[in-house]
Amino acid sequence: MSRAVIETLVWTALALGVIGVYLSWTAGRLDRLHSRMDAARAALDAQLVRRASVVLEVATSGVLDPASSIVLYEAAHGARQAEEEQREVAESELSQALRAVFADAAQVDLLKAAPGGEAAAEELAAAVRRVPMARRFHNDAVRAARALRRHRKVRWFRLAGHAPFPLAFEMDDEPPADLADRP
Amino acid sequence: MKIGIVCPYSWDVPGGVQFHIRDLAEHLIRLGHEVSVLAPADDETPLPPYVVSAGRAVPVPYNGSVARLNFGFLSAARVRRWLHDGVFDVIHIHEPASPSLGLLSCWAAQGPIVATFHTSNPRSRAMIAAYPILQPALEKISARIAVSEYARRTLVEHLGGDAVVIPNGVDVDFFAKAEANPDWSGQTLGFIGRIDEPRKGLPVLMAAFPKIVEACPDVRLLVAGRGDEEEAVASLPAELRARVEFLGMVSDEDKARLLRSVDVYVAPNTGGESFGIILVEALSAGAAVLASDLDAFAQVLDQGAAGELFANEDADALAAGAVALLRDPERRAELSARGSAHVRRFDWSTVGADILAVYETVTDGAAAVATDERVRLRTRLGLTRDPS
Image (cartoon, rainbow over all chains, first blue to last red; front, top):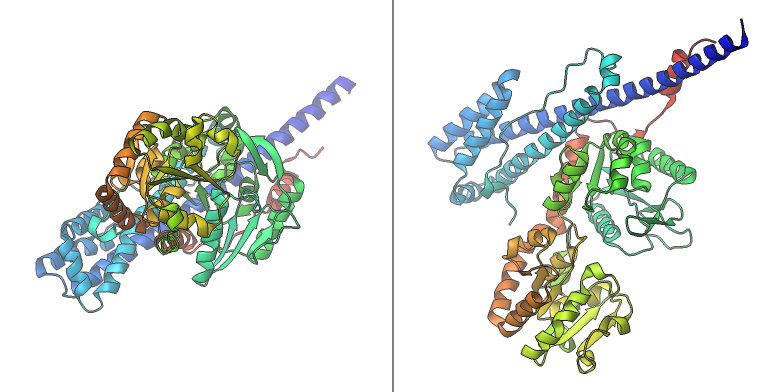
């Protein structure tokens, strides 16, 4: 073989090596983003379930009037039982029910005045504050993963494998103002 | 919870970010958490027991001023050792986009990472150029915190994604319970900040001062902060210079007493503020506040409900606002009462609880923070390279 051919081969091998390292590094980046997204999704799930359970507890405690209790119970029950595709809608409905029931500051005071109500109100306030927080972190992770997955190098070399395309969690998570607001 | 906090700026140089980290660390320790702070510091500087030195910071021109930053091999190694020894449940990085310890930690760590963005610089060229380098490090952050709605907007604009807003904290009672100094009260205006830093706005106040004296002949101006005093009063007519008192650098206690004593606290800053902690401190002390209408200030002052705002860099508007407040004790009392109620949301008890909520959200079910091992990459590299 002539010297020129060997030189070309060496350069090609080197170039392939560099490209390989770069692709492998990108795959590692993507892998990390996927696991961050999974962790964020698990955290969001935990916060949503926690919110629904606190609401169920308040609804069945008999502190609130029967109409409010039924509205809250229905919404919380619906949110817990919802299928994956209906989840966003059911959780939004729970947010709306909470806003409707606690639209009046007097209702919040009523809850706080009941025995053990102070702690329940605090737990409920913490839950409604953390849901938007967890959702923001989740959707931020989704955005970062989507940005990388749309890149040419990832699509052409199928670096994402069979992982499903990441989807943001869209819902109405506005908390009731009188419950969640700071003094 | 085991918490690691990364401070990007020199611990021995006083600054907003450093104070914030110090107060946060001490607040968390009081609540019973294990906290370690990694910060650049000279080896001779005495450090609190919870601070680990990452070596000496090097002064580098960055972002329009000289910043003391940490970078290079040695710092990276220290970051790795700190992460390895700490076994933290969560690490909290401040200013992850500045080329210092924040960015190094982002590179070196994996696991639950929380980051707070303090500054809100307009989009810079360097930022755009550095974007592809920053992105792989920044996308490891599981939760972003912005210190104000304004800082959040710039963050979203620059880097995309989203962040939660948690303001900087203040120990409200420390200021509310400070003792007033009679020498500093009675028709007094207060100003705290670097004298020789034009962005802090002292020149605007100096331009307005003759008008204020004209309307309120007894008024005095108390200035606390580092800088050349002669130069600061150079623009004033000679007979007014005696009405400006310079207190130099003041201790935290004296700062609280000063804020407690003055009739009106003036914040004429012309820009570069992403939060305005000094306004929160002034409100905590019950001072009536007159501030320029920067986005960040308007937000702290509840769009003017907790303190008066004037058009930025407009000396006449400042003078008019100051005169109106000096002449109206009832309005001052009203602002003071409203400010004291409004400022409770910035107290460490509230802010600390919110930050802990963020920690708990990202650590729920996640493994502890570890160093980001590159071994896997090397093994893969062995497979990918052509067998030649």
